[in-house]
Image (cartoon, rainbow, N blue to C red; front, side, top):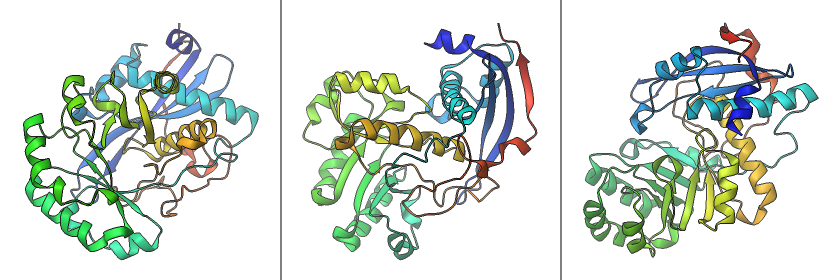
Length: 328
């Protein structure tokens, strides 16, 4: 499949971008790709590595593309661009006939969480909290919010492996017992996925992010990022009964990634409607607004007019630079 995809490419252009995190002013770097295929069709995708997750920095991916080499992240971008290329040529919008699931509200800093009434009034009923150090202080703040909001909100906790198994055991004995299980949806990768260890915690609502481990043991919840793993791999896991629930999220990157994530989530749930869940497809209050920021519809995914991903993105006006042409 990868070989066929690579051989189908004629030309690739790139357009780097920067995203500024609201709270910390940190700059994140990515690049949009425009891919022309040998059949004359053209599609777009986002390339946004996370070095913090062990991925090579953007510069490395771009240098390899310049040499006509493809990292796994670039291959996923090619597959996403191919999906748009087909739709754009045939004149339809990828999301127009699909029912995109609702989204949770992502909290990057629970200690400074504010405007909760506004968030609730928009319709959000599931909050996902990314926990970091100092963990004790953040957990105490989280417990206060859980107590204050009660049945109004369900919570998803994302540790992204900041603990080892012993630290997780201590944390759960001290804090998890204070959380009402009715309002705790799942706990995402509190410590590194190892089958022998995770097997001991089957009674806990643990979730595995595909970024953080390749599950051989069935897990309760799988968090799936289309920009990192293929739809075919997800279907194989489904056939092997390696998860009970699957939650689709974007990769905290460009709105183009949100659109493609929404598309692949909606397609999957159309096939398996009984698995449909509230996902993480909208991106609110994370980055400062920019020219491609999607309309704010609360937990509802916005509908964009136009072919492919939607003409609102106005990708044609970017200053595209060509990597190569006549690949192969």
